[in-house]
Image (cartoon, rainbow, N blue to C red; front, top):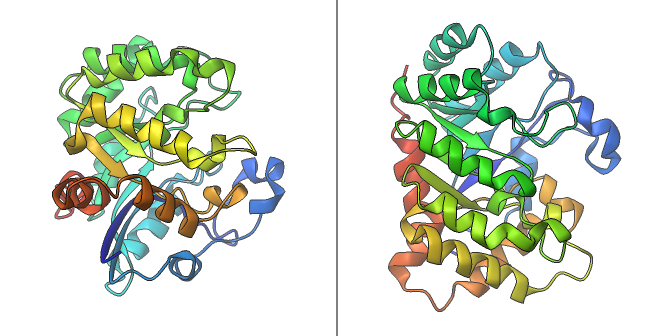
Length: 286
């Protein structure tokens, strides 16, 4: 592959951030740094990446923002933009938006919605919706990382906040073969009707069953392409979480294989052009 803009990369330094969720995922319980990410890639002539918040402990938001600032200022590093933690329902959201807007390259926010402490339907609370609207008014976007069974909520949120761009992470956390996957195709179709929603081709390995197949990946990609169109899809590696089942190299190879029949223009859109247009639009902030 000649060029890649990976729209979903996590790096963390456990000497600087506390990630409580690692206690339940011992295989990931160590630091993962930029040099580790670069070493995990296959041979690529040009690589850029988007930093995604790492669900650090409450109170570590400022520390993570300092880390993000360092990553984005590193001219020799791959990171061209960043998505930081941001709770749309937080009472101090306006101050946090102002603070993060001062860091060049921060383009949006995410708060993980599939954890046990996040009740079902939280993204449809009036305070949450108003917060997502405020993000859009500030030129920021919001990323949705949510339970597959709650995808209908994503469509409703998108309708309620049409001025804010939303990104659906990890195919909507699709889990082929699982009971919750029964309504995924219909829910994705409804979400894609909202033109302010984009979708990441990412996260398959974290939800895959042991006997996963390339055909399952192909079916997922075909469906989101049919619904969103190529112009609203972005490749994401989800490193290092992807290493729980496979590897970053393998995920890139699989997506490359199942899209090989696409036109060069469509493949370029998926692997770098769309993410460059989406995340690059905030790269001059600060």
